[in-house]
Length: 335
Image (tube, rainbow, N blue to C red; front, side, top):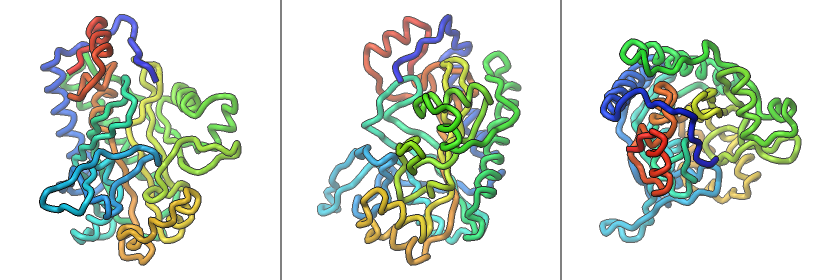
């Protein structure tokens, strides 16, 4: 995705007003979200030991920022990509009970990200994880949780409208569900991203399910690491975003792998050696809880609710000089 400049763009709020709105959205959303899903906030790491196997390789190709520590000389330390695996360990470590969970304010660096209106090398999101029973590892559980998250996001529209009526983005009243295979069948001549754009423009908000495995055309809709989401029980929440005329992904989430789906997915990705790592052993030996979890982009949620044209308007990161200049020339206020 290249830089998109909306015609006659008006940010509506000043930079300082935007900063106040960002704080309000973040504070209000995490409280409402935690209450809706029965989650407690806990502190989370910015980096982990590579040997722990806890870092995520996302779609399988991104490389983490890494460094050495003087106090731990024989370990390679990695900046986290996300906390999908760490959260599952934390649920066990902190003795979370059935149907309770945690959320964190997760910060990460994804240095291989190609930056544009929606993508930054700096990631800020609410990472969350919740304990469920094995028999709840179903599509029904997944859809019910998605609806809870959509309910909170929709409620935030009203909260923002109350304080910033001139700036709020009006969201659809319903979320729809479709699988990646159904998308391919519906739009066989489009690329995966264009399929997402087409269905989201039509329906307003969709949850695209079953991401990571091969489709009938022998290709993946998108890559997913093989060792946290169950590819049959995951998906992305997408909103149609009028300022950029594209689908805006707000959340990636899913029911996590168990002792059956983990080795199957690792074999498909030719990395069965990971079964020797502590996290993977915990799943195979059933010492880690069965869980559902995901991430909700903080800056992207602010973009969505405030109709911002560039993620750099709602977070401080690094951008190419020419991108900054072009944005300034078109009233896009990069922080």
